[in-house]
Length: 595
Image (cartoon, rainbow, N blue to C red; front, top):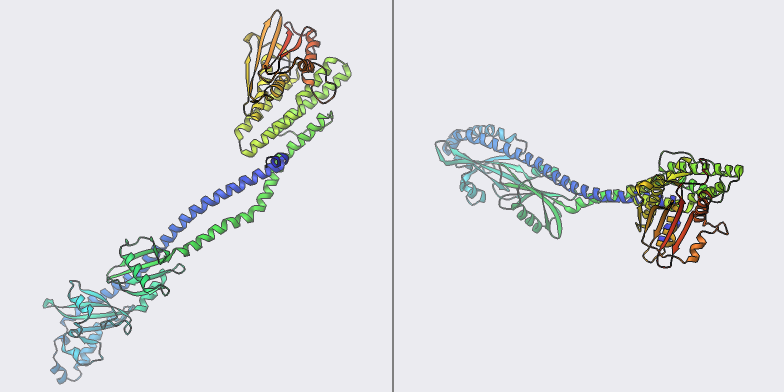
């Protein structure tokens, strides 16, 4: 994997990095968004259940209140009617008297009969009129003493009770929910004159219940205080045992609250609310699987969306990768031509970003080399030739290649802070190399040049090089050749420290003035070398494969400062290396003009 990554181009590295960042960001967003939407969706479903229940409960409560209101009106009007006290003899003696009273009863019941949810209204009284006709809707109250509703009504202080299956308690024949309202004797409030019976069809109640079941496979139950389910909707597939379990769970549940329960190995959401003015309680049950099916659509939607926009993301990533890497590739191609001695290269376009700064520095270096070439041909001076070779060495394409590759890897990893540090060091390094076109610089600037070089190398080699400088203040402004120290430090790093077993070490640069000479010592604690190897460093290379750095510096020093100046090496295998530069303190033998 490492070999594959190292061998692909910057464009594809950046493309892969962009795609990884985009896909990773999209995945994290998708996961976080799914978790959030899941919680939000469940909360919405719970709120929907509560809202649906509240609407249905309000409708049922409105119907029960209307029935109670009609029953109360009749109960207060009815007790003083003559037909309650009329005896059988009067009905036999007066033909049409029953019809008269029957019409009066119908008029009194008119208000109740016009309530939309009321199917039938009848009376149960202890009066002779109740015994005249068996098929009439007026019944003798004492005939129902064996019924549960009779016992409930006369055992409570409440004015009314609800019964299931009419006054005969036969829901199979009378599919009603019945309100039974006491009618008190106005002369003796402890005595009950009769009961008004108001029947509501269960199908009417079921029509109201259907509006609460808005979810797939949801169902609702309506049961009385005895736990008997008298009305339901959508519960055809629910067994009687499961209905009983839901009723038991709802009795312990707070009204208006959604809870999660497991019944029959299935998970459900359940809400229950009490119907006021009745002894009913409504239960709404939604299978959790129905909600999960809706949430699953959310899960599928995210990867489908990703697949749809993935081609666009790849195209955008390719364009961005090309925009960023193409200038680098063009710069590298120009550097390769310059490395082969071809300086007739079109000037790279200037940009305002970091790559533009590298282009600018590279253009200036090429211009500088071209000028020096012209000066060499025109003047034929050996010093100029050596200076040209030194500048060519400082271009050092491999150093710049490695630095750019490092910056690319930092960009892939998103380490913007280190990228800024690297580019800042590289820009400052080349600015000091140019030195405004001047051949000489002060010693403190040359030390800064070396420090920027070591900073870049430490970014590459994970801070394995420690640089120590000791320059007396009075020597910081001494004029010396530019680009004098960096090749010696480079040799100390690559041929000394990095070849040691630990690949770590210290480089010390110290300066002193003694007997009219300036001594600059560059020492390292690397692997060292033999005296024979050290002597070869000062010899002119026999081919064009490199190695001009130290030779060029030494030749420039001897030509400018005299034969008693130059570079010497002290080294032994395993004991490090000391490179000493000796310069006549009064300066160069013959000052050269600005390069």
